[in-house]
Length: 98
Image 1 (tube, rainbow, N blue to C red):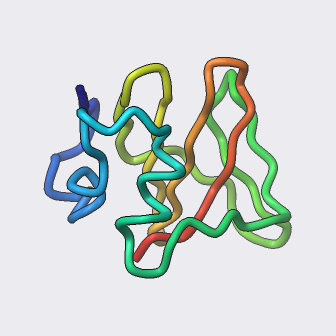
Image 2 (cartoon, rainbow, N blue to C red; image 1 turned 30 degrees about the vertical axis):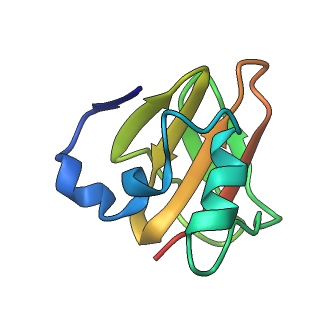
């Protein structure tokens, strides 16, 4: 089940359609299979879980525009098509999905 908080569902574009509730795999694997460009984590970001602030050297800090819950994973949508998957243990990956 997917639940979206904040913003408008339309801002996610096709991203929610890549997640199938009857597929037991985590979001990362489903994105990798169904998104044309695949899921390719981008290195160099830092993320403060408590403030939900994503940072990349030389760029201004970013706050999520919208949040989607998918099972136990939290998926955050940031400006410039950055999508982050946060696991229950607070580990995370970020990928550009545009």
